[in-house]
Image (tube, rainbow, N blue to C red):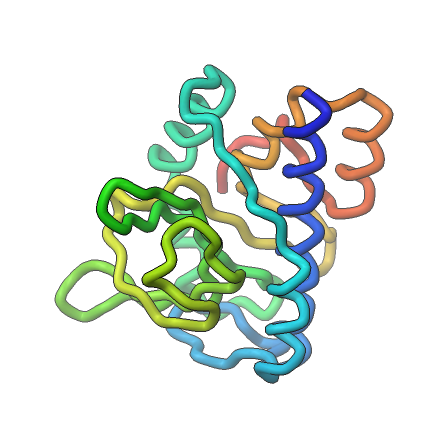
Length: 192
């Protein structure tokens, strides 16, 4: 149980660092089509701090989190496609495959392709699917999405990030309160 909590915290801290760096480079990152990113040296330092963040696909809470992310993905896309300077830290978490190997990584930024589908930039160093690299752009389909997130700048409330909430379900309540307070993560909040 503590291991999952550490992974959830590591995932949230890494994502927070990466998105903060991206926001410095592109403070108006309010649309998936925005291609701005932080300087690669800063992003690489953040990515190197990453631990392998495991997703237990057999955990009922994780299954529910992925299902919720999938069910609300279209609303997420509508919300982040509007140029709203109050929305930042836009990211999607996808399943990347290399043969029988599977890894879940956050992509930020990402774009909606004209012919359907999406393309995003890997924001951490993949450790399981070695054919992928940090900062590589990869295509993905809606079916590959296991999570999404964005933050409202004025309220500092994080929306989405359901998989981290599922991982935190195994953490001590005091740690959960601290993480929710620090990052604005509200695991009881419904989708956009």
